Image (cartoon, rainbow, N blue to C red):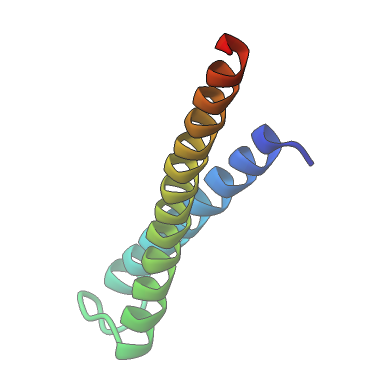
Length: 84
């Protein structure tokens, strides 16, 4: 799987975990008795899904930044050797 495919997969997992977390919260508030109350287990799973979403996006951003820095360093070294 190429880098673009991995990026799409990470994005899809992040969106799915966010939508699942919000969906569980909405279901607990409006459809599960007693209405308007969220149980501690629902709060736990919603928070875990939202943390997963943030972690996936954060790891991706960190990886991209470090990869670009490494790539720029390599390009600078290649440019220096070409000049000599």
